[in-house]
Every structure is written in C-alpha cells, then in structure tokens.
Length: 251
Length: 247
Image 1: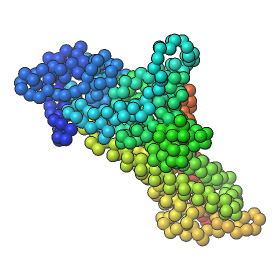
Image 2: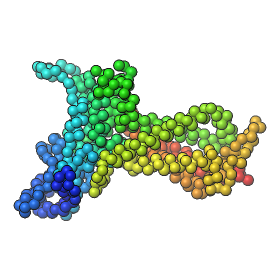
Image 3: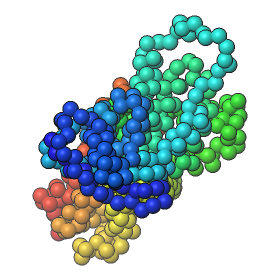
Image 4: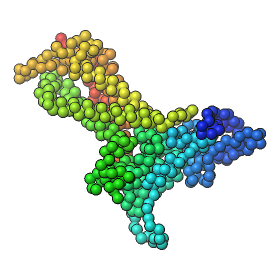
C-alpha cells in the first residue's frame, strides 16, 4: 500500500520544528507503523537524508517507549494499542497520516518525535516505590492478599509509563500515570505502609514538573494502551484527602 | 514519619493544600456542590409560582423576614463564587501553560462537549447570574420589560403589603427576549452541571467502578431535572399562565 506521511521534524530541543511530507510506497499492510517508519528511514539514509528520530524499544506493547501522536490521537485511534502494535491494515491505501510528538511543557521535544520523559522519573523518585530492607527473598505466600485487592492493584500496575495520558489530555495532566502508581502501591500491603507519604510526595512532584490539572474529560482512559480507567484518579484523590487529614490530625 | 509526610511539616499542610492541583480541585468540587444545593433550593421556591400568586408572594415575603439567615446564605454564596471562579482561573491558566505548543491535529478522544468547555459555560453562567441579580434582586431598570419592578406591590391575606413577586415574574417573562435569554442561561448552567456534578464526585474521590454508572446518571439526571424545572416557568408564562396578574 501507499501512504503519505506528515511528520514533525525538529533538529534539536532548541531548534524550530516544522512538518515535512514523506511518501511510504509499497509498504505491507502487515507492517506496524514503526516498521513503516524504519522503511522510510532506510530510504532517507540511502538518499543522504536525516532519518526520522522516534522512540521504540520492545515493539511488543509492553515497554512504554514508543510515543507518537497519530492523526491527533496518542498511539493512534485503535483502542488499547501502542504505536508499535498499530498495523498498517488499520489505514486505507492512499491515506495521509500526521505524526506529532507528545506535546506537554514537562515533555520537551529532544528531536523529531522523541520527547524527554524524565518528569515521570522524578515523580517515581518522589515516592513510586516500596522501601524494604534487603535480605533473603520472602516466601511468596507469607502475606495473604485478597483476590479483589490483587486484581484492582494489577489493573493499575499495568501502566507502562508511556505518557499517552499526558499527550491526550487537553490540560497535559499526568493524573492517570500518577494515580496508577499510587493506586497500585496503596492497594497492596507492602506499599500500604508508606501510602500517606507517597501520595503527598508524588502529587507535589507532579505539580512541580508543570503538568496540568485533571478536568475529568476521560481522554486519558480513551487512549491508554493498557486500558487503565479513571477510577484510579478518584482513588488518588481519596488517598490525597486521607493523607492530608491524617497528617493534620493524627500526628 | 507522618509528621514529615512527603517532606511537609503538619503546619504547612494548608498552604500545600491550596498550592496543589488536587487541593484546588477539592475546592472547586466543594464550592460547586454548595452552589448546586442553592440552585436546587432556589428551584423549589420558584416552582411555588404554580401554586398561585398568594403562595409565591407569601413565600417571598417570609424569606425576607428571615433577613439574617438570608445574609448568612448570601455571604456563603459569595465566598463560594469567589473561590470557584478564582480556582477556575488559576487552574485554567496552569492547564494552558502545560501545553505551550498545540497539536496540528487535536481530537481530545472521549471528552464530552460539556467537559471540554467548562471554563466557557462557567463564564457565561457568571454573566447570566449578574444580569439575573440586577433584574430580580436589585430590581434595576435593565429588564427590557418597560416595567419598574420595584413599584410592584401586593397585599397578603394577613393584610401586610409586600413586593409582588408573581407579577414581576409574569411581566418579565412576557417579553420573549427575556424568556429566551433566561432559558439559554439556565440551559448553560445545566450543561455546566452535567459535567460538573460528575467531576465533583471524581475530584473528591467519591467514585469507584461500582458507583461510576450511578454517578454519571445522577449528574445528567440532576442537570436535566433542574433545566426542566427552571425552563417550565417562562414556558408556562409564554403559554398564557398568570397573564391576568398584569391587568
């Protein structure tokens, strides 16, 4: 099949960017979008051009590296799919596809379609972990956890930290990402010990990074490649209120 | 450990609350639900128009005899309005700043019209409320009706003379422009509420997968109920209800 691409090209973080048009000729419908970009890059290199820079790693939808806004929708409009798992058969022959990087102040463009997502790392460093003394590995069944708690925790733990929620939100809010981590860890007994400290610290890191606030539009859950639902955000709001009250009155 | 929860001294919790995006959303939700309660109570008063002029005028007169209580409510509402608008402005500016470069193609998947336009529906409701207060509470000469509402007087069954609210409402809504403007105003308010109620529950954390569908239905149901209730009065007047009061 034949596709026309409008791709955001930007030499460096400080350079001005603009859209360039490329033609992907004779590409297979069984290729993923990123494999098509590989083909286009091969042609660009052969003709002495600069290949299009984009992030990718596992290419099986589990690492969270790929980050392309496809025709206005992060990871494209197929539900529960990362850009690397989006195949060309979902496009029509002759389509024009617009490819843009994530757009958010905390995610500055490094080059072309690649953005700097260190803001997410700083949020995780603030509290997205469980403090444990290292030693012998504990017995797998030493701490019984109700099945429903495990299920709800795992529904949040599937977050791969790709940042599509930020890219889709009209406010560039990172609430779905942060709420996934807060929910995942606060639901399990190992993480529950530090739940108050964690939610206060992670929310502060999120605000400090310059992400917007949540206006409950639901765009984040609509694009999440792992189908995380915004009920995790309600849980984080609840955790936050609880933590403030506890810090204010109990101590 | 908790004393330094997230690196914050307990003493600094309140500034932290106001500073954080979640705290601001808590304030938006609480003030919004407070104003929603007022809008609902206000409607129960308004609907007494269908019980006749005597009942409505006596109700309005009774309200104004409890002037101290009215001032408590007015001050609370003013504080709510001030907080709701100031938080909305601060949050919106922050949200805009979070995306300095817009998308070439922007689709906002999943976002309803009401959810995308809260700042605009809210701003227009604020203008409508300002007009509404001038029109009915201050009884200013901006009513486009040719009547001076302040001169409308009636005598209740117990012999006291008071403001004729019934005649004011009928005279006001006898003007199609006023009625249309009013219906558009309450329509915008209810559009705002159809998302606002749902978002308030979310912001306060009062939502989970079990209650999700119920919260959505509650939000749209309450918004529609308020709209039908408020719009029924100008529609009834347009159909001829209460015209004899003008003669």
